Image 1: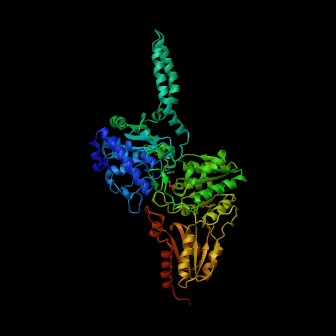
Image 2 (image 1 turned 60 degrees about the vertical axis):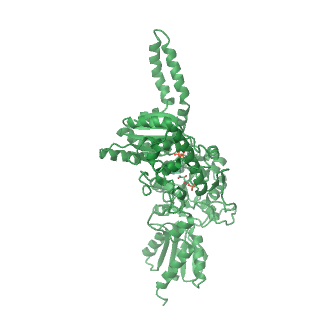
Image 3 (image 1 turned 90 degrees about the horizontal axis):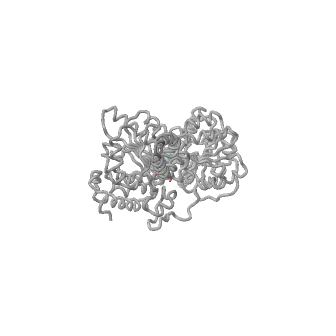
Length: 629
Ligand SMILES: Cc1ncc(C[n+]2csc(CCOP(=O)(O)OP(=O)(O)O)c2C)c(N)n1
Ligand SMILES: CC(=O)[C@@H](O)[C@H](O)COP(=O)(O)O
Ligand SMILES: [Mg+2]
């Protein structure tokens, strides 16, 4: 099946291959990746686009002595397979298996851990400066996509590298795609470069024509060439990067191994920073992915013969789709609502909003910091922006949230999708910090729905708040509860008591409400009755409810899918301490360590958040409480 691939035990074996053999190996790698991802899920289209690039890198450079930093790292499967992880590749994204992104703890060939975009040039520059400081001579290479290049940190790094002038190779993998189609002026610029060859021919023809005019030709040519400089900066490839201090090479075909080998060899000999611009096809070599690169960016299991997803039919609508539909409905009567995404229109569901209200939808590219202050500006201008980000990517906009939104008490609604444990994407993508960082922000209101129906009401509540408000909800399907078409404005800071009774109280937020209901049911079977409360608001807390529980219960249990440090349980503990109420408290949440990849079920168990585990812990705690006087 994979005769050449089975001979590759390490990168040295790649160097022994002829170009023809490398082309054969590229085909085998493609099939191997398609086969594995169809069973495990993962990032398919990005990886099919970087097969030849990776082979050319490994045939020219000497890793791991040379350093290779991938941006986002979702396109590094070939890199992993060629660096001793071929046989383990079947464990891709599984608990205890190969991670989906480069990971320093996994391999010496993974020079830098990634997952969030636009970090590669900064990290590579840092490694280059470390190299210089140690008097070493190895090469440092960053591979960045055209989407990741829209991230501000990329420009900060290009600006610094171009100024410092140290040796650094940046490879721009331009496939005209982010997850969805790429956006922004930089993307437009790169597209213009794609058509630049026509300009280059025109320039050549014009030059030879002018020079053929006797006597005056060369004078006219010189004048014209000044003119050309004006035109040049618009059309001639790479002038932007050259102005920033980089040698620009390209654009070249990123599927032509021999060509890339030649260019990489000459880039090795050049002084200072070099930017090599390659054009690739996202999804290359697999027709369903070439035709729908957005759909095949990140996939679940699928049938490789048809490309059809193996998704179980009949599952409940996702929180994402319920959010998207609710916002479209609410926007009808609220012309002040504008929607912002940071390169995740499909992932956040805002693509549908953009179709319904194209003039009220803004995709800013991978630029969460800018997106947040853009929202603040819109709010200062009298609009009510709704900004939808993945919880983990919202971490990029922490200061903008404090400085631009909360300090000015502006009406911005923050919708955090993928909040909690996301599963196979692992620690770079779990959205487990937002309750902690949002809770610290004065003027902020923080909500988490118990199910997809309550998400609708929380969104309606948030957009009615004349200040900052955040709603956070998990990746994937809801609970399958009945969805109404109504909107109920919740009373801010008020909890919902789901069941009364017993001498213990479960106070839960978001996804943990369902979990504690089941834990309470387990305990009830052994005669331990309890009160179950959907707290709804992490900020402001329903302190009256907490007071009542502190007075009447012998144990209070909090539960959240967020780190324990500074989360909802901390808020309850702080309130009890500050109000001088001594009542035993058990807090369930994410422990103080990064949680690995795995199925959501596996990860909830890992964190002790399954109903049986919570019931056992409560049972144990009760057994240590002094018997009631
Ligand atoms: C800070 C941040 N925001 C959003 C994402 C989600 N994301 C992952 S890959 C991607 C698009 C990357 O496009 P590009 O760099 O061109 O790589 P390609 O998939 O085209 O190979 C996005 C937006 C992320 N990983 N990090
Ligand atoms: C690499 C990256 O950051 C995105 O592709 C992310 O993996 C998408 O996550 P979802 O699959 O939850 O949309
Ligand atoms: Mg791209």
